[in-house]
Amino acid sequence: MTTGKNYRYLFFDLDGTLMKSGEGIERCAQHALRHFGINVENLEDLRPFVGPPLEDSFRNFYHLTSEQVHEATRIYGERYARLGAYEAEPYEGVFNFLQKMKDAGKVLVLATSKKIIMAQRVTEHFKLAPYFDYIGARDEAGTLHTKADVIRNIIQTLGIENIQEIVMIGDRKFDIIGANEVGLDSIGVLYGYGDAEELTEAGATYLAADYQELETLLLKN
Image 1 (cartoon, rainbow, N blue to C red):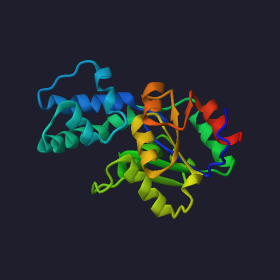
Image 2: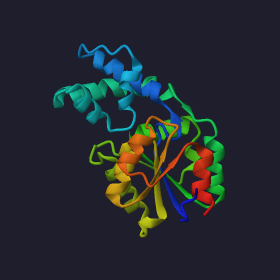
Image 3: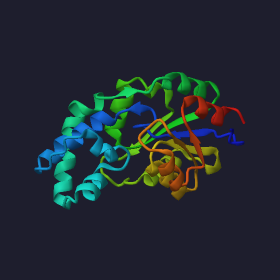
């Protein structure tokens, strides 16, 4: 299957799309919740933390107050900066795939719900940064909250006039919903932390099982 379109700008989610990073995120969430007497022994129960803004996860999944959410986010962030960010690894084949996209003249953009400092730190540490033309993320002040906010800010910053040249690539419904809100096509990847049902219900334009299928969608028009 091909898209029939020649997307110029490829917007990528990070966790679950380029990086196998669930364990680090889950351990940090586990650590933060313990501060409030909430003991979650099975890390898989914290899998929903991979994808959405961190504050939303603490609020929606564990019903923390605004003050508790602020404290939980701080505790999470301390462990994440020290350990969690590095309890991860790039997916096998990701570097080869990104290089093929670069060689094809695509503009590679990161569009993550991480805060910008950690997004830069993680992509540099795992040697992903050199492949990207722009690192887009949530700002430290918190004015950008949703994935749609991040996407809109990137489009404005880069001065992209034709949004039909953009496709958003991600593994969770938040990536797809964000793309839909802005009017972008999207590709849901099935090797991350979401599944076909979640991504289809969210309205993904296409699905890809692996990097080979992604390459076919993006290059063989």
